[in-house]
Length: 140
Image (cartoon, rainbow, N blue to C red; front, side, top):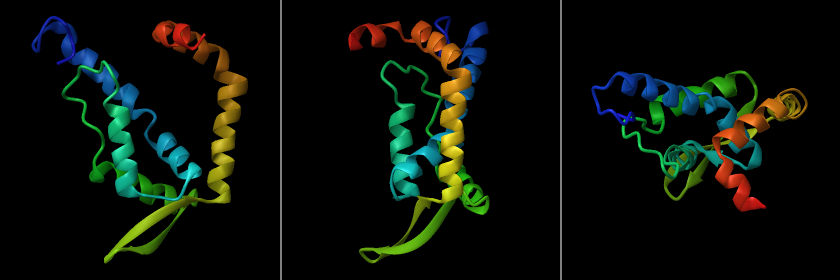
């Protein structure tokens, strides 16, 4: 568990739920953003998310990166909604499905950027500066 008071402590389960919720909250948006940057296949998305979930200093063993049973339904949903397009390609002797962003997906990413920049940026900056003050000091 994450709490300092041990695996059966009062705060441990709640602490773990909050951290899991925070990490999962970015799921679809992060996947869409990754695909907006380059044509990519599902396994590579999982590999990159694994790095995200193994953030330096993260001490919660129970928070596992999303596996195929989470990633592929998200990809299928984004594809069904027209935000991404999948195409099968040969990779050696294996067929691999690569995903790329559609114009609608790009519009969605731009709307998210606009919301973050024009509507949430101040509160996000306050949150980021409060949660990660050391990173800001290192950049200066």
